[in-house]
Length: 223
Image (cartoon, rainbow, N blue to C red; front, top):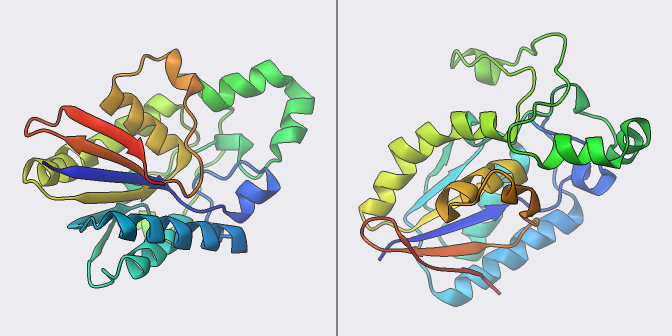
C-alpha cells in the first residue's frame, strides 16, 4: 500500500510579510525553518521510510525538503526538482502586499483572484527571463489561474509521481500552497467551487494511503 506525504514549505519571508510571491525566490524565516524541523520530527515518529522526494525550483521548498530529510535520517535520498511544482504565478500581483491590494480592489475581488479555480489575476506586461528556466526552454507565465497551474503540474504527476506510487513506493512532495491545493482537488475529487474553501498551511504534512489503483484509503494530517 503506497503512501504519499504532501507538505507546503515552511513560512517564507513573503508569507510573513503578507506578500504575493509566486515564482519569486524568497528565503524561509526562522519560524519557517523551525516548522520544517518540527514536520520532519513528526514524520520520523511515524516510522515511514520515504523512497522518492519531489519539490519545485524554488528555494523555500527545496530548503524545507533538505531539513525534512535530515530530520528523518534519509539525507541520502536524491531530491527531484521540477519547475512544474512551482507555486502558481500571480502575475502583476507578485510582490504586492495583500492588504494593500485588498484596500485597492476590495475583499471580494481579492478573494476571487486568490481562491477561485479558473480566474486569472492581472497579467505582467512582460515576460521574465531567468537562466534556470531558459536552459530548459520553459516560457515563464505572465500569470496563472489555479487551473493553469494544475495543467502544467499534472504531466509531472502522471509521468513521475503516479507511477512511483503504483510501484508501491512512498513519495514525499514538498511544494506550495496553490500547487498542493490543485493536487488535493484532483486526488480528493473536489469541485471547482469547493476548492475555494481548501487551505494548505505551512509546515503541516498530509499523509495519503492509496490502494493498488491509487484510490484513497485514508488521509490525515501527521501530528
